[in-house]
Figure (spheres, rainbow, N blue to C red):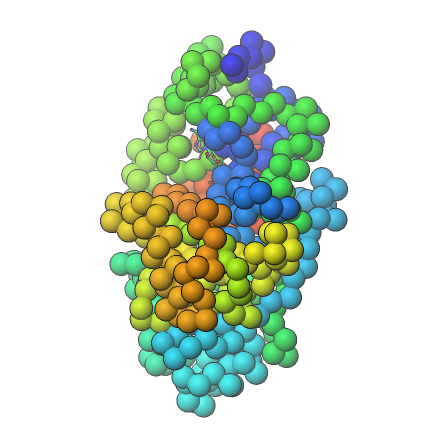
Length: 437
Ligand SMILES: Cc1cc2nc3c(=O)[nH]c(=O)nc-3n(C[C@H](O)[C@H](O)[C@H](O)COP(=O)(O)OP(=O)(O)OC[C@H]3O[C@@H](n4cnc5c(N)ncnc54)[C@H](O)[C@@H]3O)c2cc1C
């Protein structure tokens, strides 16, 4: 039971990467800090599941890009950089006509679904995205208009429309051009045709989180797992956090992970206009199936799904990122779908979701048969808020996160970059320092 008579300097609600980075900053500055996490383990969206193999399987597929300097610096500070593994991968698209490599200029020129003019316009689009443009200006236009204007309608319809639709469903056509611009801007510029360098953590992302927790705990951080913070009241200058196990934790300042928790816990502190703004933000849920197979499905790590047959956003063959030796020689393939949490699909049983995923794989990759799937080692995960919908707007993008003795750590404050562990760490550090200034 979590009872502390002496108030903490800071309580961090949420043990995802943002909360852990904030807690580490607090310790570096000599503060008494406690992390309260509703689940039994830290990690949030980046957690994983042990399936009896050497390495754990991520609940939602994860990797790092070359540009993810905040997380690399963070892991270096904790002497964990030795566990970062560099991986060379090939990526492409899955279409009704088959799988095609599409991760370099040379691959683009071999791509059979576009004519030569479309290919040059596509290259022009990439070149524009590599320029240092003002994201707030781009935020005024939609990704659809930006891409269609530069690449032409054919490239938009064949490639981008299915991707935006499977990521954002009914919001696809309102997504901000700033979001797509930054996603491309941060990717490595490769024209050689050799593929892309990505990074992973030896043992899986859960191992990374556990190593971070061990380090931070060894420096004096208190952790309370399996405890939901249900309410917060202020008495005699201090916050009293009312926890799901009936205990109370007292603190001077609070950092709360996620907009949803902020809306509930900060009811007496959020100004009305901010409460309204927070409520209006839209976010996609995600369903992710990790299939364990006896055979590989392709040479690609990542295949964006541009086919007409399903709304799975991508086929991610994890064992083309890292060796299958770490998974008892089996092949791990993720299928992911962004969706509304109220939809029938989101609420299908685990068995039905696995069946749907297996049938998608066997249809598109006929060399795979049902009996090559190790059903008892397949995993299903779902989460309600996984991808903020960054809609284009005539107003500058703005997400308020500082309120006197409170700070909010939420995916929505990451702009113009897409959410990710790298930016969770950046925001965790930044908001900690603003809160304590
Ligand atoms: C499908 C998918 C793929 C992704 N791929 C990548 C990738 O390849 N690379 C990458 O870097 N990132 C990726 N991400 C994003 C990454 O996982 C997140 O951006 C990051 O983990 C967010 O960290 P966070 O700490 O901000 O929030 P979270 O991970 O959501 O953590 C918040 C924590 O707070 C806890 N919490 C909330 N409220 C309370 C409360 N009241 N009491 C107690 N605890 C509470 C929650 O239980 C949770 O553990 C992916 C995400 C998804 C969904």
